[in-house]
Each structure stands twice: as C-alpha cells, then as structure tokens.
Image (cartoon, rainbow over all chains, first blue to last red; front, side, top):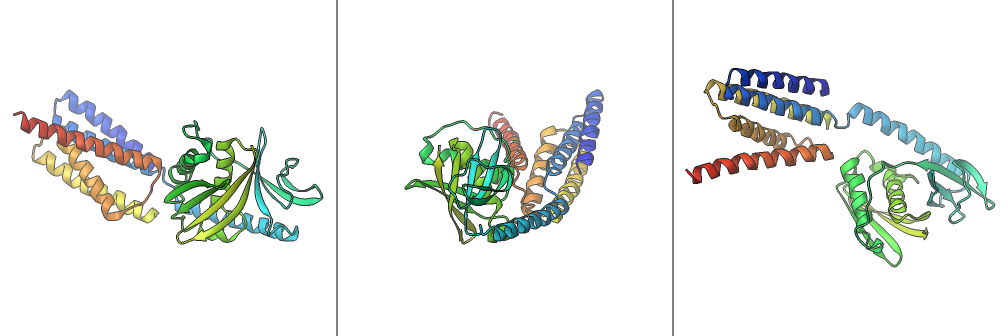
Length: 226
Length: 83
C-alpha cells in the first residue's frame, strides 16, 4: 500500500504540472484530490499489520512462558518486580532481596538469593519537566505518549500520587495483550515501571501491586532509591 | 482491524473516483471544491468503517484534513458574506 500511495502521489504531481501548463484548474483539482488519496494511503500503510502482530504475540507468549517456568523453578513467582536503572541499561529484576544493584542480565545469585534480570528498552521520548514530580503529571504525559500515541495499546491512562505510591490506572487494554495480565510480566507493568524510573530519574523502582479492574488494570509503584 | 482498513481504503477510493469524475465532467473549475468533497468522502468512509487505528500519524492526518476543510468552508462563507 505504501508503494501504491507514493506512486499515486507522483502521478498526481505530474498531473498538477500538466494542468498548470494547459491552465486547467479543474484538472488541478483532480490532481490535488489524487494527491490526497495517495497521502492517505501512505499514512495508513504505516498501521500495524495483523500477520506480523500475530506472530509477535505468539513469540512473546512463548518467551513469557519460559520466564514463568524459570520463576517457578527459582521459587520467585511471588517475588516483586524491581526496575534497576544503571548508566547504560535498565533491568527488570525479579528478586526477594529489595533493590539489588549488583546484578547482571540473566539468572544469578546476589545477597544469598536468586534473581532474574531482564534488560528492557523503551523508545526514547523527549522528556522535559513541566510539573512537580509528586503530582504525577509528567509521568502521565509520558505514559500517554508511549501507551496511547506510540503503541496504541490502551484508551486512557491516569496517574495519581498518594502516600508515597504512584497509582497508574490503565483503561481500555488491547484485547490481544489482555491475556498477558495473568503472567508475572506484562507489557503495561514493564512500560509503566520503566517510564516512572526514567521520568523521576530513580535508580530503583518497585512494583507494589497490580490489580485488574473492569476494562483495565491498576498498577501501584513505589520509588525506592532516587 | 486490517480488513476494516482495506474496506475503508476501498470505499474511500471508489467514492472519490466517482465524485471527482462527476465534478470534472460537470466542468467544475474550483480547486477547493474537489478538495472539500474529497475530505468529506474521507470522513464519511471513516465513520462508516471505523478502521480504529489511533496512531499519531493518523491522528495528525485527521486533524490536518479537518483544518483544511474548515479553512475551505470558512473562505467560501467569507466570500459570500463580502460579496
């Protein structure tokens, strides 16, 4: 569709030039209209394609199954997720020991207990501080930008800050990602934790709780180390 | 989602072709008439099929087309009022 759209735009430009030469404004209207059709096709050709999406969903489910089995084997199923930020990487760490910083990506032992650390990357969106950190406005703006504008995986996001906890409410979850909510690791929690860690510049962020609500999820997050 | 998108594009192109051909055969010389009709057809097709692709580019396209349509209609209304 992208190639077709670009071709239509090129033909429209040639037609517009021709209409200028013969001074026919009606033909110019046809050319501009064609260019609009081509432009619309180019824009819509960037939409996610179902076959690719289905494959990625299937692949992700397999990976999450492997992770869940590993967590079971290491007796970490009821442990909390921590986001540990280092200068070069951000890690999602499953561990019983709070705020492990001496961790390497993969499975290992630190402080006498096992951990699983997964390197995560979220798209670099520009962040400028516009409101007091505690208000959660900047976090909400960043999450909207990522979850709604960039990934289109939910309808709405709300962030509030109460008693030292950030409460992130994600409404209108994508139907294809909904089933990830039964696994220990889901896209919404990972993106939310990593975003809060980035916006607040926190070295260690903890997932306190994750609750399903009608048509959404509530995620409670605590910043452990600034 | 993808099927809806294809239906949307098909309806949009077919209706645009019919409208543009009709306007040209009627010897319409105003460029803005072609563009305004095209934008109307775009929104009609969108409302009928609801392809639901809320990416930032699509949102930007929707806003840009709406602003263009408002500008065209505004210009025509202004022209009528000052005649």
